[in-house]
Image (cartoon, rainbow, N blue to C red):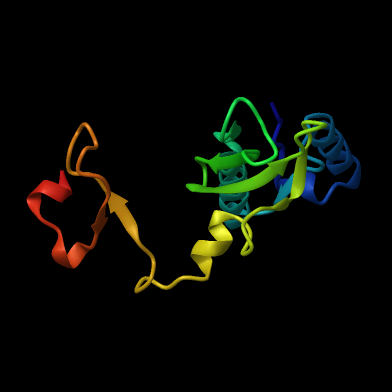
Length: 154
């Protein structure tokens, strides 16, 4: 939890009062008070606080392995992250040392994480797959908005 402090009006010009406000903010985990000398400054302060909170809400990460029994030939781990505040996420793959069990810090994917790989693609060569069968027996179907049918849209 963090405490956001907005210094308003005469407080902004009073060094002693502003120092107290900065101390409150620092002890609340937000470093310093946001000074708002007028209505526009106050509106900007509230926007900055809201953006900061939104960016922090819902961050998460997970790690999965390709196989619960790591061997020298089947030793991939997958690390994912997602931030619901910015609707961004990523996935990457790392080798696990079969002797020590420690994952490498170097990506198995030559272009780096999935986000890096997607950033290298354009909309013309980025593919999204979907399935039109609930049991998956038909397999992946490339989704293209120009060729979408009612079966692939639902």
